[in-house]
Length: 259
Image (cartoon, rainbow, N blue to C red; front, top):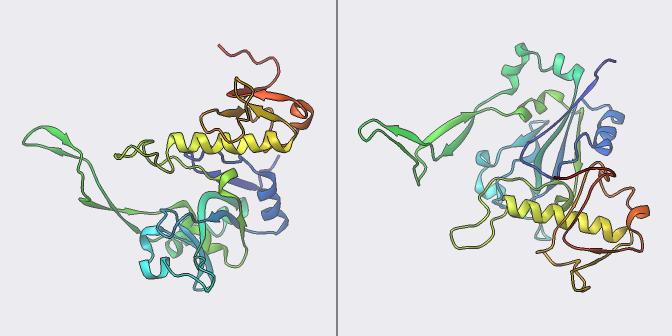
């Protein structure tokens, strides 16, 4: 069968809905050449690209490319003017990739983004690898979303809830002061667990600890539901409605043997 559409996602987002039928249906039914998922930024300085429109074209403006004054601008209600953070989940029609994104056209879309980094290097005198604590270099980068501008007006923006769909892993779990870092392995695990607890509660389950106490808001007791059991919270009612479930728990497909 002919492949007509392409779904892409970042590998560090553990709650990404792979080939999300709602997102794909939105883009395909809309006849869009490309599309992007966004969520409301947590803070003005959150390190995510901003989905916007520049010179009549839809673009993701990388966080390192935007002026701080523009980034921090708020409306009369105190909300960020540029609040749509890109979560790196994209749709492309194959015709768009074959035609508009042909190598001859890419020079119109691709430009280097400046990224100031702490770049490890080799010290020849000491013959050791040096991991700098301060920014010491510049990387010139291009991104997969740079081609969005080639789609013109044929572009779809699909906003989602962060709690359900965006839990990237970018940082170590524990900060130097002992606090839990955002966008870390532990934070992502907790976010996935909390979202899946809500699935169970919405489908009529009662969540308790080993002593029978309410555990629905206990962050120390996790839930994991296999995507082969439920993709986004659907189909759970017949399994959990009216049942008391002791946490922590893992719900997996029938006849799966875990060693």
